[in-house]
Length: 283
Image 1 (spheres, rainbow, N blue to C red):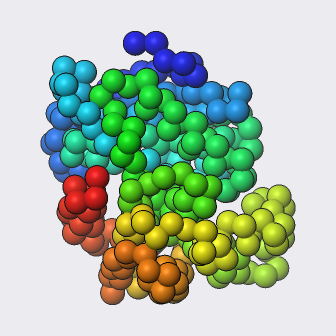
Image 2 (image 1 turned 180 degrees about the vertical axis):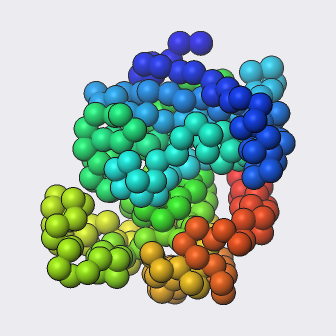
């Protein structure tokens, strides 16, 4: 099938040895029940790398599947996912019965353009959503978003921009970008960081959910997950935004894992089941 705005589209096929590793990490269904494709698509005339995942039986089924945006963390090439990780992470979600879209953002993974960490690169997410309209099995009336770290910040920015999402899952998410910068880098090195060389104080405020909390919809269901031992993004960020959203009357569930680090490695299975149940309930 030909797609508008997709320049390349290839199903990810891994060697048997790697598939066995995937089974241990994400379950057999991530391989047997899902198709994951690497794509290069146009976003504002920029060639951007991304992934699409969907149930393996989708083209043979009359069913329509809800759509989920999966927003990665990191900046520039730090935090991008490769074919192996995409096959596991996105394939698992697709095997639950969803169509998944993940952008690696402009300026990353050999893509042109510049990653602005919440600037024009937000368009890369919006533009990958448009591709769902060309998939006959995608239910474009039902959208959710899952974001890890910087990806959680992107979720907040999507909501601020008026993108209708029935639910969002935020994991170790940045909700105060200025606080994150100050917590993460020594003062002497902040101005030397490539991210800070392109962002102003106003940019940091514009990307911080705690600064635009009144612009976030209360109809969206929020699942906020964080580790109490996260040394990269303070769990106080999640606690603060949770309190602010709750005060506005939003439906929020907040889970803090006492010994959880930024990547919540010790709690993968519990988080997996929590996310699966959450999407099933609200999508």
